[in-house]
Length: 441
Image (cartoon, rainbow, N blue to C red; front, side):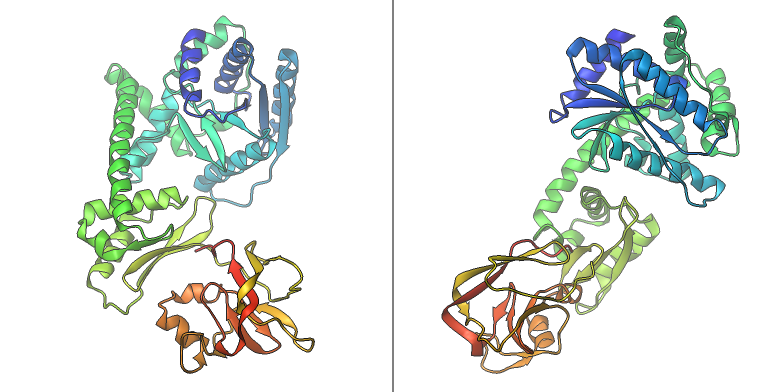
């Protein structure tokens, strides 16, 4: 079994060459103790740094004992050990699993050394359970592909080297090597859907149909391969429709037809770490894109993988992916400094050149936001008007207008950074104002 594990992990690590070490997510249960022993032998063989991380959820009266057990197990093996206690907010019975899992991944990411990949102990039986849980929710090809051997979460590489190993194989390995482990009593509670499948449903199916788990795991692998092909089509379709990182041409998307359009949007959202909305919501939104008036602005609410709200919005025949809009604070500017860091992390660069004149001694310089009623005459226009008028004429999406840095001399708007300068303040030898990074959209 060790040889199989070594070959599997080596192949997976070839896909993540940036990995500088391994961190085992160690609960102390049978699966994770088997993983710890296999990973330790592998790390010694290839001379790779290894550590283990235990997360104390406080959900069981035995949690302190489990922490002590995992710490002692690592000490006996000479493995660096990290732990963290997490507190879970109130959740329903069905929600506690998801909250515990999310808290665990966040804590593991916080504890693992930089550059280390996280090794997770999910095995073939877990894969089958995940398939059925997602089938229950009406998942598509991507969801039914269940867990991938290599994935990313919280900016970490997550590796599951045991997906081709059954729980029985791991139990045999543990027994053969005299490994001790803890038993989490919550795994016996069939009120949890996963436990119900594990303890009652899947044993019956495996008794009735020989090799049932192997066939389900095989189906999940086939679905992952098919999803890879769908991703290739999605990438090609996005490249034909994409106009900037956060903008797609709706006419090009709609011309693809519903199936390819949805496939492209799934891929686009996944790349930007957003969850896919329900099939019904997405179908309604696509219908709006097809039949809505040109000047309408349909939108759909989406949620990021870390829980933040976002939007898919149409404006001016383009589809935008809009993230959370940070609150930006007005601030004074010292023009002697070559750059100004805004409160949302963006940077404005100041350099000499054709732009606006230098301020005089009586003029204070500030950067403000959202002053859309301020009047200005752009350098290419014969008259002044409200800023909102000019931005609408330029077809700047409404939600982006609040994020544009506006440079004021006292109470006069002299520069709309990234767009135009005030005609009355132009100077061939003055200041240029440039935005170094784009506003998050």
